[in-house]
Image 1: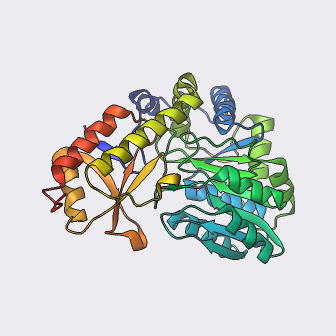
Image 2: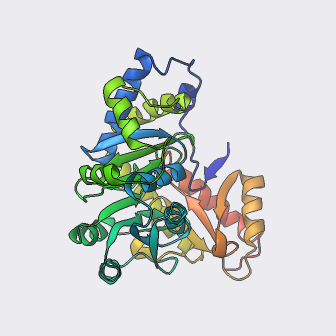
Image 3: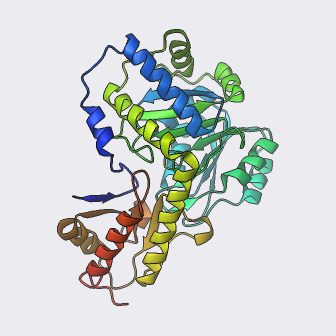
Length: 363
């Protein structure tokens, strides 16, 4: 059996895969009404919020676009805090729709400094919203969102968070931290195939949505909320099989307990980092902000990264991710989110140890 250890999509439990094979139901009928109601309530528990939570059919990137078009108008000033590829993407989406985006780019491998964010807000008067990636899978870094939220909300700005690869795996108490829009995606820690985005929307975000003039139709939060509240439905045909899967996955997650899930991810992440260092490999991300869902490892001189991942995949059935953009060929990444435990990490580390010398690494 293949060990799929990329930052997403992630392995799915057998129970979840079995749910994917359920016969179709009428997405305007009572069975789905109840299912959507239950899923929404379960999502609120994981998001740790009393805010509205909307389930949208699309990838995580679709969820990011939905946040842009529902909170901004063309010309609105946005501070985009980027610590990697996906932070850059979030800002690019806003630019595409005509927002006036100022980018605060952080050296890859490091986390955003709250003081730097505070300074950037002061130096850019009129900023309406701040975009922040909680967990950046391209670099294996988790921002200190609790500290960053104090800065953003203290300045009276809208806080929009990409939590695609953190929500459900790393603690993110939406209400406690005052996050206005938080986006996640089904293919990450939720243990479900790609196809659904989840978005929480605060009262402050709804005020922004009412004033927003960005063009939107499919991603319109007002429509999504109205259909959910009045009909217990989605406005458009949802990915029904993914909702089936999410129904089962949420039950499993809530039974385990979200605090226990966070602890499990912290344990396997530390085990991964310790194991990688023991093998003589350097970590890419600063350890003080290392992610608990993906570990980025620098490729040292002499190691053929392409051959390394190829042999792992073909001979040991372990699939790891490479680097993106400027990090292509410079790092490899081990995803450890969702359905993962210490046994999985031990198997991966054992396989890596065997393949390293084959791919030219000398400790």
